[in-house]
Length: 357
View 1 (cartoon, rainbow, N blue to C red):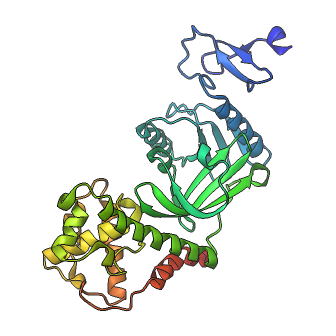
View 2 (view 1 turned 90 degrees about the vertical axis):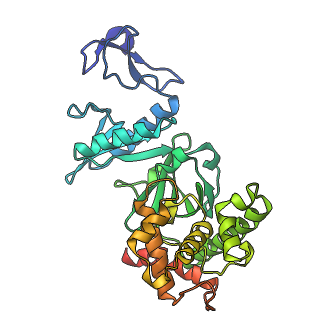
View 3 (view 1 turned 90 degrees about the horizontal axis):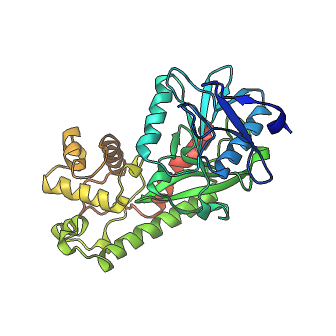
């Protein structure tokens, strides 16, 4: 066999490496334990990772593009799992199986971008989703998994995952933030044999599926309001309930226009109904009419929330624009804003994208 008759050497350090192959082990090369090579690859990786890279390499190599397995990019000293070369540009592809610090993911991404490359990160399908049925649902992601969500110009927020065991891609697309790390979204499964490169783009929800989004969103909104009263342990120290107290409004009786899906709402960890009501309370407390909200006022408001403020400011601006569009100027104003307008807002977000496609 090759292991007895041939010798293999590392392409970087030129030192000897061992070919590891068997009935269970995915074939790969490994340095000897005393190696001094600092660019070693395929070592210390799980079988899932090795198998996933092998499957992705075989799939990509069958196409028109050139594919390299674990090439060393000398100018940034990084080695992507795969490098796909097309006439337009090169794509580093990283298949992530283990949970590592998000700072390391960001560092690697920044390295690729400094080299003029836009990486494609593919997360291993989380175990709890491998047998999940397709269709519209509410999905809870960890903060680590949430990092892999990317915003596509026409598809909105999309999470691309791959399950090497079943050789299937799992798409979580058209993600609409609910609260925390919970999203309403579409789950679709695509067998590897039907995948293409560039990777297939998920379709926008149909009109019927958008109705499911609306129903799930309104149900989540109502539960959020009920739970804030039933499960509250902070009393009046809770910022949301404090706003309700000062506004003399019951949480379960807030106007329907407080708690609506707006672009960039995922920048808030809080549910829409909370941050929007606290925003309305902030404006009233400072005697700022809805029609005259300055950028400075919005900056002051979002300063009270954790995280990056730029997208929060955008979310607040979108919210004010919607209120202005429907002619809402105060909390005491009687409006025709009913639940079907939540359906309208979701439809505009997703079905408008489908039309542009």
